[in-house]
Length: 219
Image: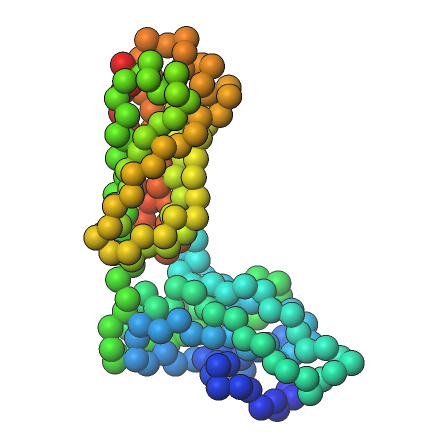
């Protein structure tokens, strides 16, 4: 049974769940460009996960899992969580589900008002070129440029199937660039010292945006 709760202004939710139903589908997002919220008014834990995939290969939008109401305090405070990714959606209907409960699904209906936020877009390049220098210092210098606002960028450098090193949690404003040195793993450093040349690859990923890959032969 749905329990009517007074939600704080900060929890103006687009998507609401009961046990085990999304209440009010289709949910409407209009104007576009908003990160919407999810409120769980049921006793079971639920989440919001788009059925369609984005350019990062993950669900187009998704929330964290939100615990249900405490049976010992059913009229206590109700929390909300953001449904990240909704800010990038254009006009259309987007089915979603709760990954914890089979058959618990609904539709997000995005209206024509406003405009979506530009998706994260990054470009990655390898700055290092001299193999002996990389092997000696144990660092591979790379550069990442954000064409649009891009948060939580992750970089991974590899030599074939061997991981050389990586870095995560990078946030960049639109049109900004960051150059950084990826610290090599001990095994990677040892392997590079035995080579005359090495074809390295650096892959950059960013939530809700397409990945980018750069390759370079170190000599």
